Amino acid sequence: MSLHTEPAQPPGSTASSVSPVPALPVLAIVATVLMWASTFVIMRWASADISPGPLALIRLIAGSLTLTVMVLWVRRGRLSIPRGKALGLTVAFGVSWFALYTLVLNWAGHYLDAGTVAMVVNFAPLMVGIGAVVLFKEAFSRRLFIGMLVSLSGIGFITASGTTGQLAWTGLMIAFAAAVLYAAGMLLQKLVLRDVDPLTATWLGCISGAAALLFFLPQTLNEVSDISTGTIIGAIYMGIGPTALGFWFWGYAMNYFATGRVASATLAVPALVVLMSALTLGELPPLLAIIGGAICLTGVALSQMRPRSRR
Image (tube, rainbow, N blue to C red; front, side, top):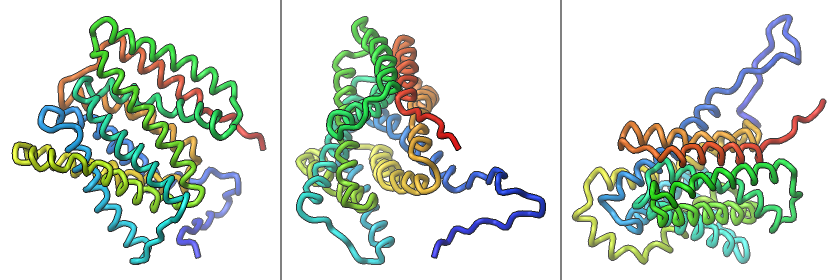
């Protein structure tokens, strides 16, 4: 029995009346976008205090513990673990997205400001569209082609900032690698979700990512005495908030809105990162990078547009 019921219509109302937008799903989207944007700023802020590996490990341990509590609560203490190919794909998804992407993202923060990293990483949805055409034989639409051309021109502007010395070329390459890993993780997730529910996939993926990063445990133990309390709290927050609660809130919103509508909200992340970074860290990307990032995100938005359906 569904807990969601439609309110009784007042006298004189018609079936064509526009129903009000539910408040909680909208708040879930807003909270998730804000948490994901804060990740880039905290990652950049902590780069002077902690190495990429230990930061990623602390984050994923916190995320794994939080997700374990969530799964036990939602499943009422009963766990369902996939087997065979489904489990292998889930582990691969977790290692590529949670472990490698998080590690490389932290590494990029040692070279670039948070805003530039966010703009480059958000090129990933377009890579996912191209990957879906190649791997899943989806149709190569005209909007995807146009979006690809627009985004590539924007990437050209960002790259020009590196060639002119305004940005660290090494940092740009690392950020592009993070975008590739992000896209690879999303494509693997598409395969995983054929057999595994979203919460279980996120939980096992985060645990797999944390296990893959145990290589950095000795380094983490060596650095922890010199790491500030604020950095440790920031790493734990990224595990609990953006990693665990963020995915949960995102899935909740998906139940109320179309996937494309929810996904388009992530295009606000780079703008929020630039604003947060300017207010808290006093950093702004170079002008060429800002122009290129705006063009790139426009291309991503064009590639995700869906034609209006006719009644």
